[in-house]
Amino acid sequence: MKPKVIILLVILAVAIAGIMTTYAGAEKSATFEEADDNPKETFHITGFLMKDMPMEYNPQIDPNYFSFFIKDKAGNIRKVVSLEPKQQDFERAETVNMYGKSDGDVFRASKVMPKCPSKYKDEQNNKTAQSSY
Image 1 (cartoon, one colour):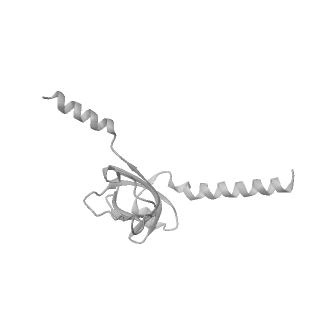
Image 2 (spheres, one colour):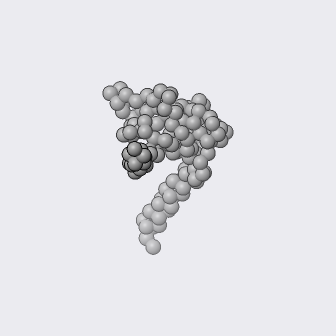
Image 3 (cartoon, rainbow, N blue to C red):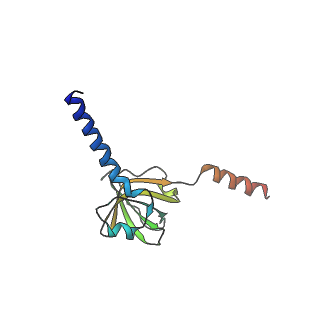
């Protein structure tokens, strides 16, 4: 093989290894306490959106700053800061999946994926309500 091809393959292998190490410990859902114990590691946390607590998003000031509060599966409530824009209908989310790192009293999310209730669930509830009349 030519040296250029070998160097390209080594660079590609290092890049893939770097990506895999970043998300290696993030397959199972963790808690904020586990993330606090290892602040340099990336964790996957699933939690419930605290709709009664404030959400901060002002696209006129900073479209890439969004904060909200999540309750993890252990019952811990934490402020989450995402540097992604707020997703449409985020307020309707039941649960939120996040990848990120703990930073003191704040969880810094690099990826936020809200799990909204299904429109089919709403439609089924409407049909059930109508059929009971």
